[in-house]
Amino acid sequence: MKTPTKAHARAKVQAQTRPEGAVEPAQYDRMRAPVWTTNPAPATRAGANDHRRIDSRSYRC
Image (cartoon, rainbow, N blue to C red; front, side, top):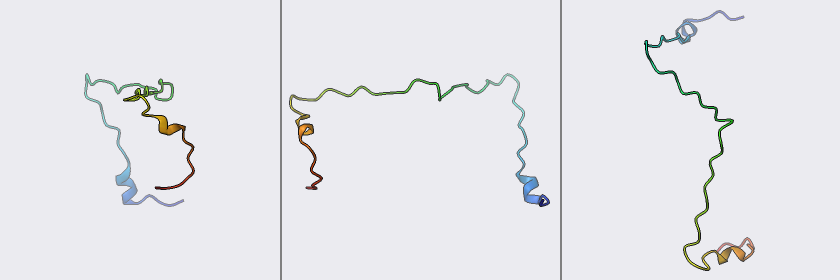
């Protein structure tokens, strides 16, 4: 086992004391939160999305 160096001693993080009356950090569970989804906007004019009916042939213009 290696012996700790001066750099290791300086790198140790000391726990900071919280000021009295400080607000606790927010507790928010991102794993159980609802997933944000967007609603697709309607086409701006009739026939605007007709290009989606054409199959792609992998040609570049």
